[in-house]
Amino acid sequence: MHEHDHSSTECSPDSHTSLGRRELLRGAVVLGIGAAGATIAAPAGAAAARTADAPPSLAPDPEAPADAPPGALAGVEVAAPTIASCATWGAAAARGTIDTVAANPNKILIHHTASANVTDYSQAAGYQIARDIQQWHFANGWVDTGQHLTLSRGGYVMEGRHGSLSRLQNGSGTVVGAHAPGQNSQAIGIENQGTYTSATPPAQLWSRLVELCAYICDQYGIAPTQIYGHRDYTATACPGDVLYSMLPQLRSEVAAALAGTSWSVIVDNTSAGFSAGSAWLASSFSGERYGADYRYATPAEVSDLATYSATIPSSGSYRVEAWFPGIAGYNTSTPFIVYTGTGSSTIRVDQSAGGGAWLSLGTYAMTAGTRTVVAVSRWTQGTAYVVADAIRITRL
Ligand SMILES: [Zn+2]
Image (cartoon, rainbow, N blue to C red; front, side):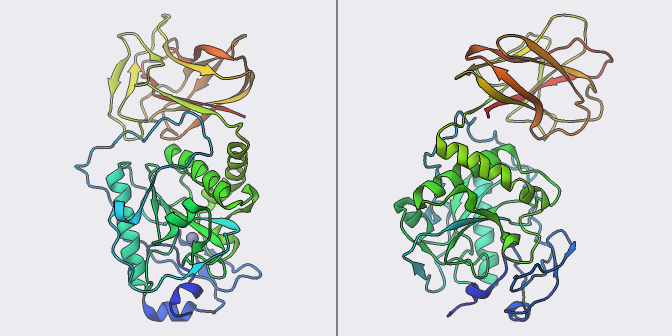
């Protein structure tokens, strides 16, 4: 107990956290103000609560181009995701002794950084958030980054506290973190960049989080049921209502990945499986696009489909989702056609709002084979553009 980490309740990037406040929080039972400013009561058994100050601004460089999300995720296996070491992302040296534990951790705790929901999804931006977090945690008086692993909104995974990665790769023991009091020597802490009180995590962050958790569970022998939110152990809004509400889905998808039954594919409009005629023009106008750009066309009573082809690996139940930028002025009734192998269904999608996230087109019984699985039609009313961006197919 030679540093504050063990009793700390912090996980958000409070670079200006005062020593006085930290001391106040140590062991005290108080009512907390969540990261979003909502007052939450300390749950039974919670040792302490926190007052999360507004995080520092993390506005992306407006000059920086938005990179394509890394890797269309074809298949979620228990393969090791690429994890950038402290040396790779440019960590400063630790400022004190980092304790270690020989026993394997028994759970994973999910956090959000309570910082800005940046739209710069580049690797460079991911490495920068890792460096920023380390400085914020130094300012807390901690010896190093508090969490074991960091995940950027672009889906880049980075080592947090020095020593976390080699032990994870060896599947033996860990370093004592500083991300949740009472759990720092037995829970792997993952900080997800962003604020998920009302926003949904980007698809590329989510896919990587599933992959990362599956890898951690596999390496340490942790059951996927042992994935929790920070708030389960500390009176805090972390990891935000939306991300917290997705933890059952996370456990389920991690379990599927560990069972080797999970399969998912993303077909973007720049992927080989996409095809569209010359009336479908490319645009990068909206920041809510998936990848570099998307296609748009004017409505017309013609058979001129933008099509997405994929290989369905086996007959079974699949969820089909679409990603598109939602802008006032885009069509409110764009026809999406889903082909199951034995028939088709048309779903009307309002593309004037609600974009920049995966929208479910439903669950379908599909037969195996390579074919057009989804198409976007121009055959609808009005003059507002219909948009074809990316689709995702996931075996259930
Ligand atoms: Zn947290």
